[in-house]
Image 1 (tube, rainbow, N blue to C red):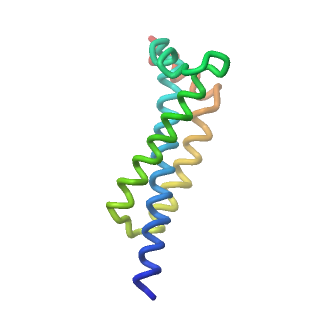
Image 2: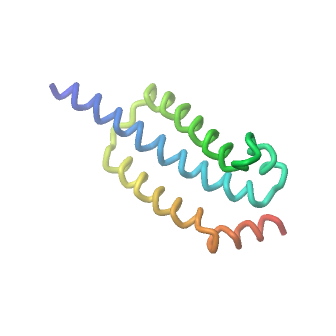
Length: 110
């Protein structure tokens, strides 16, 4: 019984860590998308939607790839995984907010 609980906890941790890292990938790529026209063009798969579709597709792919990796590599500490997820959500919230990521884009552009 305890082994089954440990397996389900490790599975939940892999989802939390994968989602957290995917959120970080999303906001970083979002900043680069705004700073570099080449990245914006690369992410524009369908012109009416613009680069947002590419951003979501790549972030989803990163989530799936990380989920596969973290299913193989067991993560045991659920408390740390949870708080990493919460912190990632807060960072994501602020760094996709234009008044905050705008100055960062301006710094990168030079």
